[in-house]
Image (cartoon, rainbow, N blue to C red; front, side):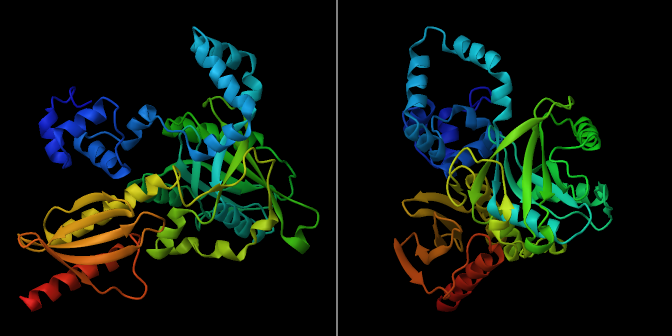
Amino acid sequence: MREERRISLRSLARRLGISAAFLVDLEKDRRQPTPQLMQKLADEIDVPLSDFDKFSPDLPKAVKDWISANPLVGRALKALDRLPEPESAVSSLEAANKWQARRRFPIAIYESELQAIGFESSSWDTETGGDLFGLWGDIPIIYLATRSGPKSTRDQAHFRLDVEYLIALSARLDQDWGLRYFGDWHSHHRLGLTTPSTGDRARIQRLATKNNFHEMAELIVTFSESFKQDKAIRVHPYAYLDLPSDDLTDAAPVILTGESPIRSALRVQDGFPEQHLASFSSYPLGRVALPREPLPRVSGSTGPALQPVTDRLVRRLIEELEQACNGQVELHAAPFGFILVAPVTEKDYIAFAIDGAWPHRILQTDRMDRHAGTTHEMSLTTDPPSIMNREDIVKLYHAAKESRAGQT
């Protein structure tokens, strides 16, 4: 990618803030970059960060754990590796087992989004629904299950989305978070169907054709006879993997524990007040029933599901700090997480040490005099902000800057 853009090795290394030798090691696959460096590299050569995913040698921890718990899988992988044409063998297996493989297509969703669906479903005695937003990769991840817009229509057997609201919501979530709209959820109160209806499939086909989507997801919510007493729901996940065909695939739910980081960030920033983003917590998770889960529940506050959100938050925080300081903010990896360094004057800087664990709170703030080589720790509030509270961190910068000016 660097050579295609005619960027020299030394020029790119200088722009990344690393040595040319280290960049050579990265390109030769002798060393692995930090997530922060990977993001900076993507920005410098102007490609989406996701373009690098196919080169990553790492398996998600959940997959490694699953392979460890299933020795037969490990033996099968080793046997494939010893075959003269492993790709041909895999193709034959896929052709022979296509139906079963499609029926096990995984879709990940946060517990908070299941609770949000439960809360909204239990609030109506007619059909209702909303939209699904996330990232569609090898395992699609649903980060946000929304309520429908104010112009949605409902009756005992039909539900129609508020299309104008959906368009506006999709644009903001795409621009701010890079999330894609890839389906919807809705309830079947009186129909009793556990699968998408003919009308549901036709609607998905129309949306896919209009937006040039090849894959989408749909969650169907049904209710037990005791719903009036316990308000419990059952969620049935499906995927369309060959749109515009209406072929339907049963989805295997992969549940990410805790609250979605997107929902957390939007709550902190008072985003989309009409969505009542905190209401999910009043609906007990135990009232949501699902098909058999293929894996134990996976932590939603670490690992691949969290990294895109962290990258986006860090990038936006850097942008706001650069506006505040009218200069370039440095990003450095550290054993505890990462450090942002913002200039005050030619020699004075403010450094923010940030926890690598979600929700990425400020651990320490220092004033730095790079000419003298000295640092001075500043006192933090009793409840230090996280990178979701960008305004508070910018205020910390201004307070540190004013404190430094007063001393001068």
